[in-house]
Length: 229
Image (cartoon, rainbow, N blue to C red; front, side, top):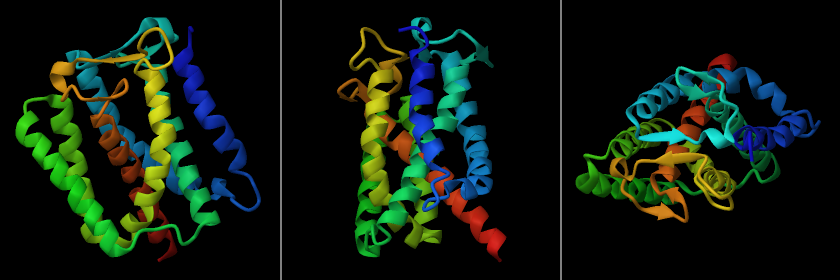
């Protein structure tokens, strides 16, 4: 389907956007923290995306995109970094409103933190020469360590919601990587990742999602806290 990537972005964004104005949620009031946080995240992730695309570590199927590009990235890829974080942080905000006690204990958060970092370090021991694995896991290890040491309570709040968000994220990523459709929207060079897939999704994408969304989340929290001082 032509424009499939664009439709996925719009479909992911439209309902969270409309419900942002719900009187009990009022997520639109968070925009002044959200969009600067997304912009900072994009400064890193888009730069990385451009380099990896130009190097052929991944690429995009012209059959599923509009063909409009900026710095050799389809416009849909730029929208991905706006629409998906928006939808995910809206989900976090909604769940926090509906279930204010939805969080791990500090001990539980510590166990998950140590488990994730240990798993990524072990993977890097064997796959340090795979660029997607190296940059993705390296960044996420540093980010998790920073948040765990500086904002442990926020990490304990974010992690259970992330596990919920991961399911629709994987559904979207599944379609992008070839699940349910004839071909891939986004293809990967498996010599630059571990070659392990969850259905059609490179397993690194789970930590990619964690790094991207946690970046936006902690920046939002930091901006809001700074304003209230």
